[in-house]
Amino acid sequence: MSLRSPLRKSFYQHLMLVSLAGAMSFPPTTFAAAADDGGDSSTVHRITIEKFKYGPSILKVKTGDTIEWVNKDFAPHTATALDDVFKTEKLKRGDVGMIVAGAPQTIDYTCQFHSNMKGQIVIESGD
Figure (spheres, rainbow, N blue to C red):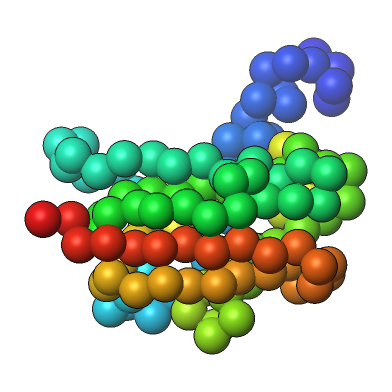
C-alpha cells in the first residue's frame, strides 16, 4: 500500500483529529475537549474558516453544545479567545478544532496569526 492511499490518509486524518482534541486545554469549569457521551441532546455547530474569515462570525449556542472550527484555507489558523478562555491548536487546511460550550457568556475570539479575523460565541443557558 502506498503512503498516499485513501485508507492511510483517512487513518492519519482521524489520528490528527484525536490529537487535536486531546491537545487542547481549557479551564475545566468553562470548557473541555469534545467527547461523545452517547446520549446527550447537545448540538454540534460548525464554523468554517475560509478566505481568512470565520463563518458564521457570530454563533449562538447552548451550554453543552460542541463548536467545531474547520480550516478550508491553505494558511494555518487558530480560534483564540481574547480572554484566553480557549485556544485551538494551529489548524492546517482540513484540520478541525473543537470545544464544548460551558457557562453562559459571550466570548470574542481571533486568529493568533491573522488578527483581522474576528468571531464571537454567545453561550446561552441550556435550560
